[in-house]
Length: 598
Image (cartoon, rainbow, N blue to C red; front, top):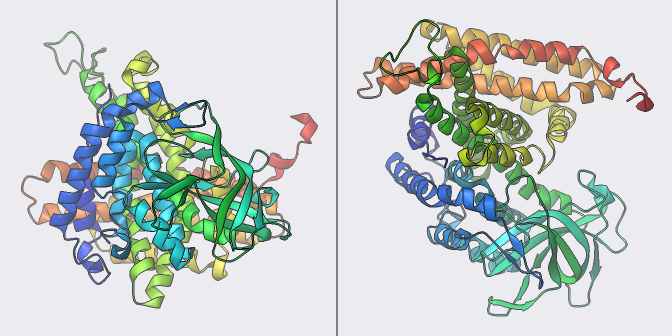
């Protein structure tokens, strides 16, 4: 059975030495989040994930969720008790405002804990993650009454939240949405329609489920401009706030899925259900994007989470599995064969996964810090710059991290050989669970189009220009640091590739949009490699600085950072050259064949 160890030490290195937590001390919630407090909180989160959630992962995959004849859904054995403990520990609302019962801690900490939860038990973690997204949407767009009724209950984990967008005939193209909302005299609406692929749509973990539902008000304009957002609870709240009579909401079926069996992915039927408008009429997509952007960052974290737990188990297996002898001669002559970790190709695989994981974790922490600045800073310019960074990097993190997380899970499975293909090792579950992250919350091709088609040109290219300036300023700062030459040289070349790709798109895509479509995924991955390379430079700099200062007891770990960073620069970052070449080839051969020729 797979095991898991939360990478608390690696996170603390990022927080203290790479991103210097003290620089954010002026933000609300950060004054109470000293390194000692953060280490203690993350340590407890890690123990919960290691000791409670990891053993439940196999059980959830094996038993799945069950729909009963009356429409009720029960979750796998142990899930209900674990969710109760998660809620009691305050993990769901740790970054929510104190006024709603949260702890007001930095949002960065929630993203870190989400990685731990996702590594330990991705299907279970989704119940909390979706609830956190619903909390964010209602805080940003809900009325005072809606916030008072729903948010404290969700923060405390007594109630959970969902996001209802997809319908049988429309996924990405929400302009085709048919779910109807009819206004009633007392101010509420009746909601009628069917939604599919609704994660955590029905379950037994909480006292109530708060559905955020996209629907079209009767007589609204066609297309996305006519979509509104509604809060539709499973049980209608009584005047005292307690769950009351059932709403006309039901689970019609549970989807039979490739993975994440422990999460109830439901067909949800709304048969004249009572709902209340969230925000302004016909502005529902704008409101839902608050939840979607939170979810997309969270899904990117899932890509890292699965990659990390798959890596940890592959390392353990590679150290134990005896096969063959090292190419340079036996390393363990007293044994009948050497462990496979002596073989260069095994090490190449493990280093590839590790080099991604450590940089991806850094980019998650850095991006989460930017989100905290955007939400909490007093300075309007700082908030705008941080929000620009978030908007630009969200599709990159979602798309690149989930593509790579799945690929890494497959590579980790390969290390096991045939044993990775059978259920007992647990590796095939990681592969199956990782696959969905590339699809939901906007398939990765859509993330690439969002990056190229919307984010690059937004506000006259302000966000991407600021990113280029930030990386260039860092490279200039390190120009005289000889110990950083193995890192800054490759990053400078990769940044040049990204800038060339950006200019090529700016010159060629307006006249032929297919150029943008054909090159979008390559551009997204090129951007991702540069961002990860930037993180590796900052980590290598911090590791070198600590080594120079002595770093008693940490030399092995810090030297491993430097070596892993060099591996990334030498073996992974050069892919930017190929990505640039593919993008500059344009769309001609991609689009030339008529449809009937396929």
